[in-house]
Length: 120
Image (cartoon, rainbow, N blue to C red; front, side):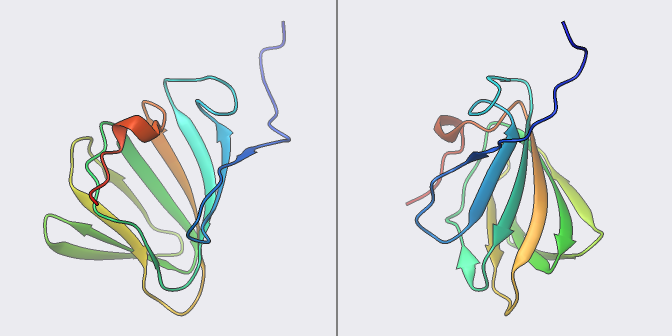
């Protein structure tokens, strides 16, 4: 048994909002429920509803900017910056800017849509 796994075929999560989500490790690709690693590109003017996930989420910005609203505080991250958001925190993710935002997201435990709790 090999002691490593190289991901060559990430799972592309189907979306309706133009955001690219490529899960490299996690529930959808490797069945790993402990952690997920995803590469994402949020198009300009993209946003999601507020949510209160049951998992920690770490985000690292590769290029562009991404906005987070946490407890009514607006936080804007730029390339080279990262953030950790504790589980059970109400948050909204968006890219209200004029350029795409490329970033990596790590969720612990792994991302699970049934545990995101998006508001309608």
